[in-house]
Image 1 (cartoon, helix red, strand yellow):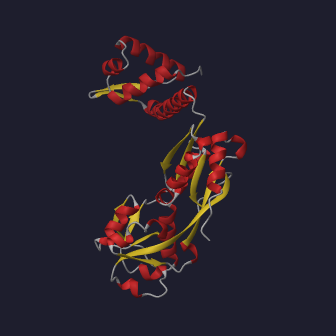
Image 2 (spheres, rainbow, N blue to C red):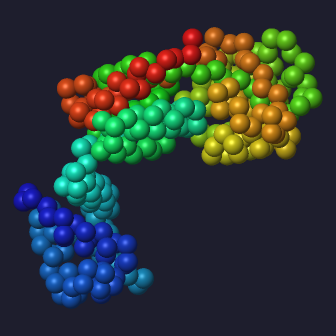
Image 3 (cartoon, rainbow, N blue to C red):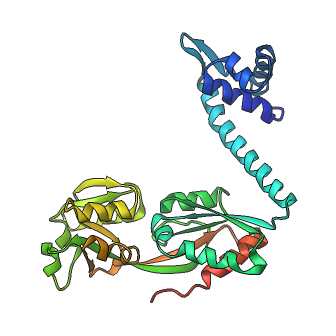
Length: 301
């Protein structure tokens, strides 16, 4: 198969998005016949029919759906290459993409990266941060979407290289006066009599909590689903549910929201986070500097 050109792929994606050849041509500042010719050449290149006409417009065939997924990925990569090369031309010495879990993002990572960027020798480095759950962090680093990932060490990192980053401590947030506040040694099984707040269904911590409940022959019941820790603690403040959250993210909210933060007496309640990467030999100089900075951060014993 001959090389695919990005212009044709971009036109194909636009036709799929608009469902109309003429509208796609307008967006590309081309005439419809030129777009049609490009798409015919693209079909000849891949050896499959890519589009079919329906009453409501042009839609991709089964082969077209497959190509559409790949085309979007290729165009995104091309856009990143263009952006990064433009930045180098402007004098930027490096860009580092970092993926991190919500817990890490909510704790100290932003401050540590800010400290890194304040150093005069790092002023021409740019860092992009994106939040993902642990399995997606690992997948993103493995697939080359990011140079560095930060996740819970319970995640299956496979062949990735790892370094210790930080520790945190899972605890239970409850409203003041909640019955669980009377426990001197709070165990996870005690919390299962109450409804919990759910965050990120497929996150490593949620899967672990479900598994631990199952081992106790109990069921973890969720009443509310949220997307961040602040929302979870607001739910707790309202008395709708309790939440298992890292102690390290509760400091800003516990007093203001009138919450009790109760340590969990479980071996798994102290979590270790790791930095993962594909190997120091493939890291850019900027990524290597950041990796060393983050791994040098003192960990909580």
